[in-house]
Image (cartoon, rainbow, N blue to C red; front, side):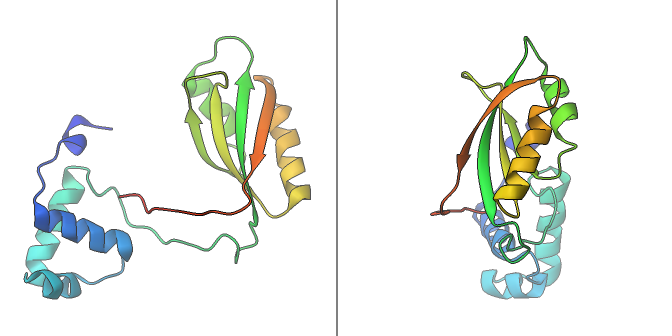
Length: 154
């Protein structure tokens, strides 16, 4: 992440604009302005500035994965052979569509992935594909039973 994005100047109004967009990215600038006592163009200027400095990186839809049929969520520890670079881990694992998140970590595993699958058969097939990658020595999986708290990225 760029230094400017981490330390971008923001005020309380910027924080409220960000919070409103995180809550619903489709909220109009006019609606946000009405809530904050600003004109729609003033809100747009703030959003444009926040995008320019990298605070806001984009707008997205939040989908219900269960409705889409992705009902199985698993955290998988990835253990690699020898010293392996982050770039090698990424290039190896990014081709697996079931991997929703991929992080390198400190500790025994080299990486942890959040994997989504339709069911246990799909999960088994995805894990077999991941385990067949030459750099993967082994994996260890933890199945999510229920998601108790999920905070939007803000």
